[in-house]
Amino acid sequence: MQKSIHSWELAPREAIALQSRLRTRVVTSDRLGAVRHVAGTDVGFENGGRVTRAAVAILTFPALELADWAVIRQPTRFPYVPGLLSFREIPALLVALSRLTVRPDLVICDGQGLAHPRRCGLASHLGLVAGWPTIGVAKSRLVGTCREPPQRRGAWTPLRDGGEIIGAVLRSRAHVKPIFVSIGHRVSLETAVAYTMACVTRYRLPETTRWAHRLASGPEIDRSTARRQNAG
Image (cartoon, rainbow, N blue to C red; front, side, top):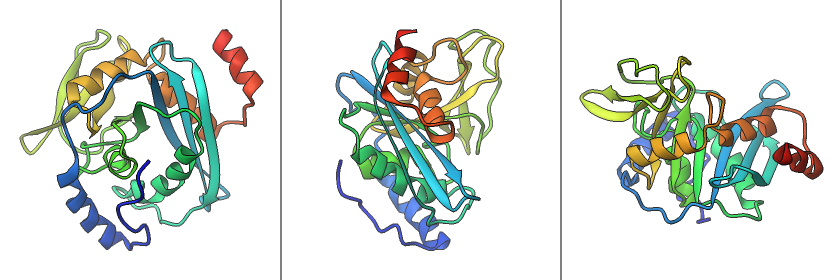
């Protein structure tokens, strides 16, 4: 994982200006190799938001079995500002990523990528600073307009903003609310949708997100528990 490409000690107005500069570096075509391990990321907050709890789960691909994980806690250093969540969450995620023993080939983030007002949401920002291919998978829409996708599993429609396609509104399960997939970095939109669906089992969200959320917001798990859950 490469060194950070910018300082994290920024005021919100400086962070907004940085996003506008970073967007020009995002690669929107496929630049990834064989995917044998896929990561999920999620961040929760404790102690009234004063402590950041960042989690990364590594799953084998395509079997989707838990192979490695890391959870870290550190003081929260950036305020909650809509559109600037990457500055609040990524510093802790980078520490969690550095503690993994299995390197992911692809990272699926719980958040936006290009589907962001300045085209540099958490997934794109993390991809740039970590140097890995990333995808944004969000539960709700931050920006843009769309048509509802057909009710069948795997159907999607474009998410547009100002005439630009910024993501996909994806029906991950039939007759269930769609999720919002967008390019993070080094992955095309079509490939992002395909990998997202490959990580979806019988739930609305991909297994990468479900595991990371469990680690970031749920009770601690140990290695023996993870082995039993993989087996069952």
